Image 1: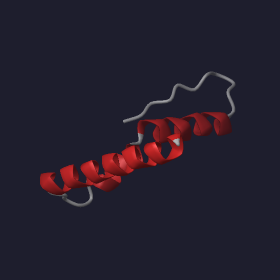
Image 2 (image 1 turned 30 degrees about the vertical axis):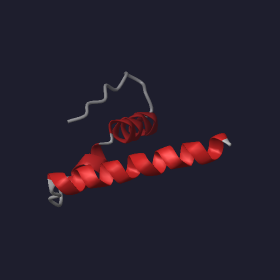
Image 3 (image 1 turned 60 degrees about the vertical axis):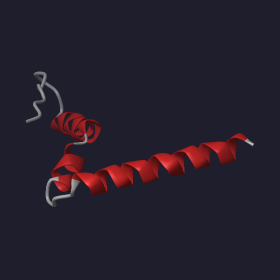
Image 4 (image 1 turned 120 degrees about the horizontal axis):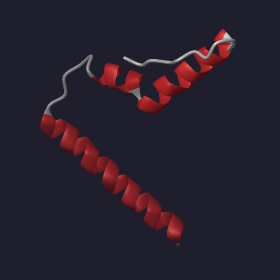
Length: 64
C-alpha cells in the first residue's frame, strides 16, 4: 500500500499528483494487470528471450 504524507497547508491536488507519480513509478498497475491471468513459466521465458533478441537486433541496426 502506498502512503503519501500530506504537509499541513498543502494543496490536495499536489498530493494527488505525487500519489499518481508514485503509482506510475512503482509500476503497481502493471503488476495488478499481470496477476489477473496466469502465464506459464516457459511462456514467460520465451517472451523474455524474444524481447532480448529484438532489442539486440535493434541496437545493431542503429549502430551502423
